[in-house]
Image (cartoon, rainbow, N blue to C red; front, side, top):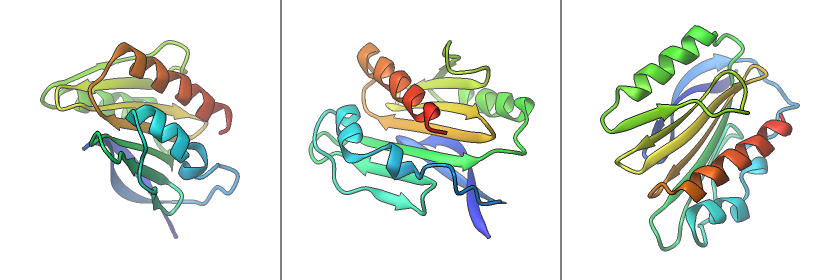
Length: 157
């Protein structure tokens, strides 16, 4: 049995709440989408080797700036729009969190920015949940870059 995650943004990328799910071999692995070059562009400098969570998660730590970048791709075939909305509401209630929907990323998404610099973009798409997290001071350019990258990731799902 493969493990899958229902993510919530934490410490710069997604903390995983593991639940059983079926395998989907056609979905790219997280580290195939979030490579070192992409992670370095989000982190603002070179990153260490990735930490790969059996294909569903990939995270990088910057070599100098202390930034963390991560992506998870999980099966969400049983996640309803109401479940996703509840997750957004719970995320928005966390200390220092501000959430918003991003136009052009489908009906079910939210961007979260925190005063703790634990920022993320979560999208429910084709029965998958993608979560891109960056622990770093948020800027308009970084937010734009995260949205652009998420669109590229979604095109490969």
